[in-house]
Amino acid sequence: MCICNDRRWPETYRVMGLKGVELVLVGYNTPRHNPPAPEHDRLSEFHNQLSLQAGAYANATWVVGVAKCGVEEGCEMIGNSSVVAPSGVVVAQALSQDDELLVARCDLDLANSYKATTFNFAKHRQAAALRRDRGAHRCHSARIVRTSRGANMAYDLILKGGHVVDASQNIDAVMDVAFAGGKVAAVGANLEAGAGTSVHNVAGKYVTPGLIDLHTHVYWGGTSLGIDAEEFCRRSGVTTAIDTGSAGRGNFAGFRKHVIEP
Picture 1 (cartoon, one colour):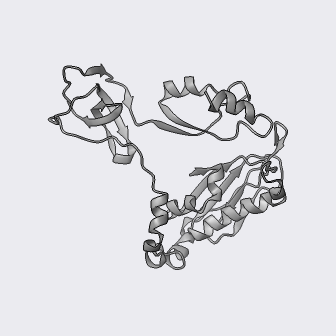
Picture 2 (cartoon, rainbow, N blue to C red):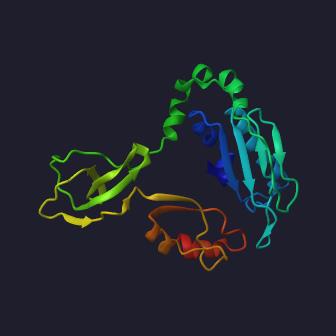
Picture 3 (cartoon, rainbow, N blue to C red):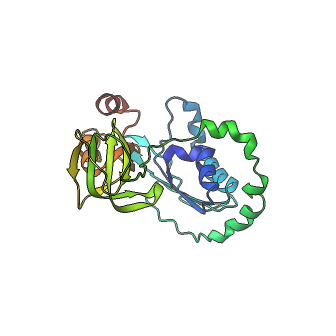
């Protein structure tokens, strides 16, 4: 799954393609008019289709693009929801600016012949030649680190007895989580507190790395869909919220001043 502008970048599809993806689902909310480059307006639909079809073919996967259409706050959206086969062929597409329901049979096995031949990454992809590119796009993320009970560390805070869930490391169990210097220092059973350690009993509650809300609207007061990100994220465990189109050319200045800059 990916969102909006992600669909324009080949890395989006390739990262998933290398993991054997069979179907990529992307939602987008794209205006027809591009203020920084109005000369591109007439190519809006073409560029959209080019991205979806190229991503599908070059990674031997189905791609389903789900678009907002019509006019929102005076801004016309391109629409063009599409279902693209691993061959790059569009098998279903919305043709109007009204609500439409697309129905298509997505046979995941259709990708097999492409994955085994033209886009057999293990056989044809020269990873060594891409080493510099891979380094430039490598992502680093904070992770919960397991440790033993006897680790000799001074913790600032320990959350005791919470149900820890970290899908990236297949952790799904009741454990303690210790912090030092503002970072997660250890996760384990019965972590020992030092003289200066603050201990909070969180039994019966879930403890997770910060959650990412992939589709939200945080322009509170600026649009009818907007929520107060500070209030909502604090009580829901969300540390990253991705706004998917609350502001456009007519109200972005207010979005920047009241939401981004504070």
